[in-house]
Length: 195
Image (cartoon, rainbow, N blue to C red; front, side):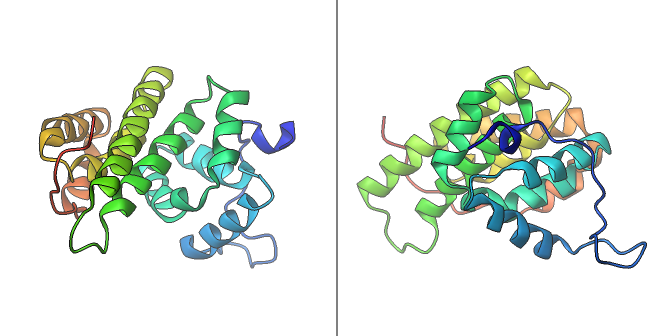
């Protein structure tokens, strides 16, 4: 990964370069393009989208994009970027979203949850919570990480109070997110994460 692939995002147009004026690339298409960049170790496209949405305080767009792409980021690419830029708030948010998505993946589609699955989910939620703390300390005015982690916290009974706190913090920072976050589907509850 070269330095240009981990640079903080600079504002760029959301308008597709070959599109007519006023046309904005649909989110799913934009997400597919961003995911394709991950294979070459490039997080720049994602960081640019997140930076534009952060500047505009368009929290729903940030959350939606992370919902679409976070799980597809190769872990080595993400961890390398975070190691290169440990004080990059956007990377802490992305890391929180990544581990939150992986926590949820451990639970989805399983009629019975194995102890190994619970352990992996527990490891992922702990990593997500660490990244949440980092993101919140680096950019206290950004509710994105709080919003991204809520669903993953909701699968563990003993973390429900933490989930409620995340909801409170996100909506305290951005009251306009209240209805959006309340409407998000939370997963069913499973056993406690392994210690």
